[in-house]
Image 1 (tube, rainbow, N blue to C red):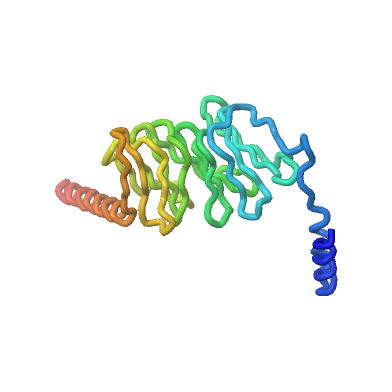
Image 2: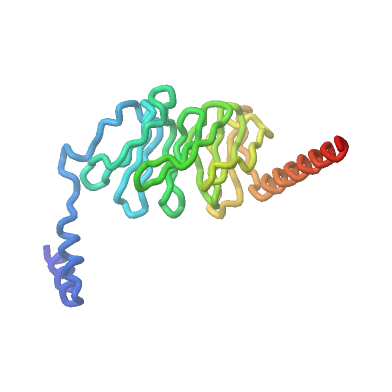
Length: 220
């Protein structure tokens, strides 16, 4: 208790009595209050907000819950479509904590972290494998259609889909955000340069646009 007295005296001497009072009112959850019923099995781990105030978890009954980290009370719930759209893997928060990305069956869904409102939903070719990865304004997922997808994190627009191998695992991104690590069905681990995948996708889009203009010119 001497350490707490010292903290109190220090805060009071600096005119921060209100801070001390707020700290005193923040208590750990009481035993038996720190849990919720998700309604279905939880496959992935929870995600925790940067301020340690909110915990997000998805479950196989097709819902995402936001829970107060202090007392376990439910803040909001998102319904992805019931049991027909189970939420697998762990949710992923955007770097600024404003958005939450979840894999709901065949879809990657972006939610507002504050209230669970759906921002957009991107449909893949099959069930999404594992957790989404979010960085650099993009979200990455692998689907059971064996494709690796890069989706615009703000709009949900597809940037590219890569099928160089039969991708089989959730991707992992290097700390610098420049390399994706993904496992394939042939038991190989691949390191993929993001800038090269971006450049290839840009070249393919340019070639497709040029082909369309050629066809339109020939038609006239």
